[in-house]
Length: 296
Image 1 (cartoon, rainbow, N blue to C red):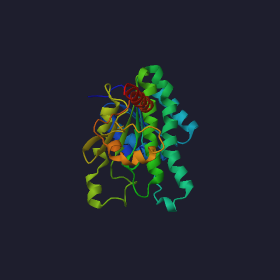
Image 2: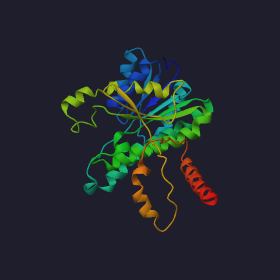
Image 3: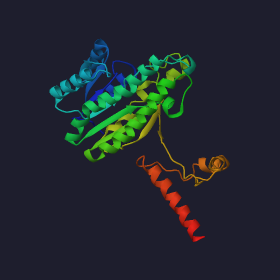
Image 4: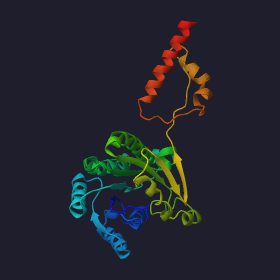
């Protein structure tokens, strides 16, 4: 499978996982914009791609700076005429237990991960809609999906990206814009000191990047969350159990407690196509209960 003719922007690709993403997409035939805060780091990766026979340009820009991101996209259009793929990879860590966390560090992590992805996605959104093709990949994390000690800021930002992906996928579907999430586990500068030496050796970032092909190809899915690490790939879902109708009586709270296991039972769980499906099903359940009482 090839990405020949596709133009990709990879944020935070001057090193680590982003570098591997850029190299991988280039090997698959895409022309790549290597974005990083550090111009020299971006230049190095772009040169690496060029030396391997690919095409790349290096653009230094902060994903939190709307003007700089617009300039990056404009330069991409001047160079290659379109933008097909955006991989929102840029990120930082400011780990600390919530009790000791300063709110400035919470805001900073949210700003880089969430707002950075939103700013970059907005900068290419109209372009992708008008050309009838677009692939956007958000970088989420198991810390956001499932939580992790000392990462309240990071986890909140990463789960927020899932919500952003869900809505953009719905809004972009009729325009050929597909939006997905990648939850990587990789040995990078962000994970040093968190994992053991043996684990870091197994979690080569290069083993994550192949997941991108499924998410940016011609027949890519949309609204998928792919978990990848150490050559292992899995899907994560935000699911909704069948639940139980309890009603609004004076003992409703007690009924929720009494039926907790049944409410939590994952058997028959669904992945809603859109958020309002929750309300639709709740109303349908209430109406069904009313009909049962009437017939009785």
